[in-house]
Every structure is written in C-alpha cells, then in structure tokens.
Amino acid sequence: MTVKENIELKVNKSINPEFLEVMDESHKHAGHAGARPEGETHFHINMTASALNGKSRVERQRLIYNILKDELAGPIHALSLNLKGTED
Image (cartoon, rainbow, N blue to C red; front, side, top):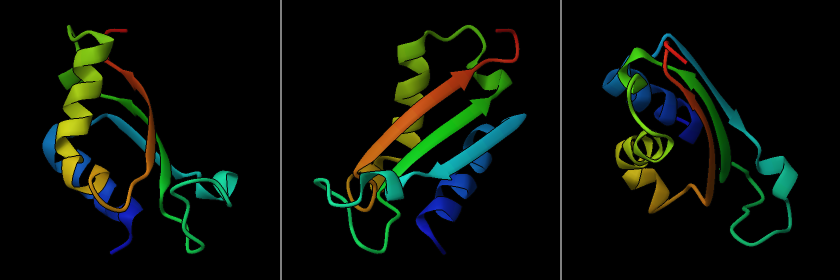
C-alpha cells in the first residue's frame, strides 16, 4: 500500500469525510530536505467533513495530525491541510 493510500484509508476510517482529496506533491520538492527520489514525502489534503463542524482550524489540524501520527513520524516529511466542516 502506498503512503497516499494509507492516508486515505486512515482518514476515511476515522472521520468518514464527505470529500477527501490527497495529493502527493513530492515532485515539487525534489532535491529539498526530506525528499526521497521515489517520492511520497510531501502531501496536501483537501477535506470536507461534518466531523469538523464547530472545531477551530487548530483543532481540525490536530485531529488529522493525530490520525496520521505514525506517518508523520516516518515517511511523511511535510503535510499541508485545507480542512472544512460541512457548515463552513
């Protein structure tokens, strides 16, 4: 399973978002610190989920960081987030 597929699986299982887009942006960081030739180090997540309703931007980010803590300690070097509740 790729890192991207693992991210999608964990987020879907934990939050069940209405919309989830995980983009591997590693190619944009080739040659930078933390980048590996095979990629799968830099990701961006766009997500809309009712589970995020009523949460601040920081609470939303912490929720995702907690779900992906193993990946952030290992293969993921950078993760950017665009998180919305369904009521935003």
